[in-house]
Length: 495
Image (tube, rainbow, N blue to C red; front, side, top):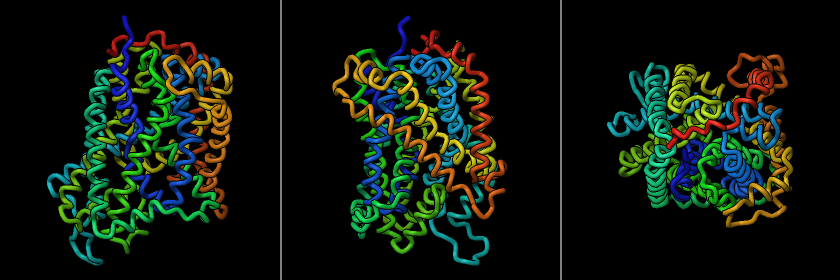
């Protein structure tokens, strides 16, 4: 039976863009850009689009199209069977992120409902006010209640329904979600730039301070943002690339995906920062420093509460967040589903298994915000190792041979030159540096014992212990993984 493929290039790119564009584009990018110099950050961010994101996207497109199996099978075939455990790591990290990402989508569903019904508070309580429920109190009450369990279940259910329908279901969802998301973000950005005082936000975002480009932290944050919001190195692109047509372009698609994703991030930055500078310029530093959840669920309602017609635009904002989270969650469920079908499991059973595990293993993050933050920390940094492993796969296969055979494959409109041979090796260096930097941030030299204890929300010890456990399991199962991830049962049921 014919294996399923995307029906057209447009359908494939919409699905890919849906995978890449998520809540990180909308709630993390504006905050990180603002706290790292605005325009100065953009310079470094664009540089790493070419030094990290696009090279890894090319690897993932090429490996998925060639191997026609998930990350484990791709590593077994292209790097050698003894490296199958690296593919398992990549698949597991993205799946571990899925376990708590469903919780995030649940939050967005709750706030969308609240925005539609007008029950989300938009004014902060006065100090000492008794019985007042402002945005902070509303958020604290929500995450401390059983409601996140229900919204977590609803989120994973919505994604499972799509993935159960195979490639056609993913394609149909992308055709609706992504154009709608782009229109919503564009509408919000246009509204933001038309606010009085918004020009200050534009100036901040697009005016670089060239002298600050010597600050290493700006470059490291720019690299991190590229790793976290383009989907490069997650293994998700590898899985979607399995469903590319044989003569489908690889190189142009990779550049389109990278630029398309970062364009959405830029629109989100315009939307948020212009609104902040126009509505609450005196609180800009406080808003930026509030963290992802604080910016989105505590400050955004206050910003819209002060804006003419803000109640309507708040609905559009949370609807955009729901669509962004939903499209990314679909890809995160498809990845472990593909791993299981590669191993011989029927697709429907694989989807339901992943959905059940996603609900069960996401419960701790839904119940305890401390667990959510720990998992986000541990596996978010784990993505840097995933990028390193993809680079190692290419080097094991032979960098020039990989480029000429798989990147510049039949149907490619653009030919990638030898510059890529250098850059993909540089990806390995970047991965080591950024991993080391993040782990160093989690060490308190005044409390080394506390920094290495495994029971902690945020430190280096909790990362190293959880990583070591996962890697030990995958190394122990390496031969079994290699033997059961060849993609030979490539699930004709997908169609």
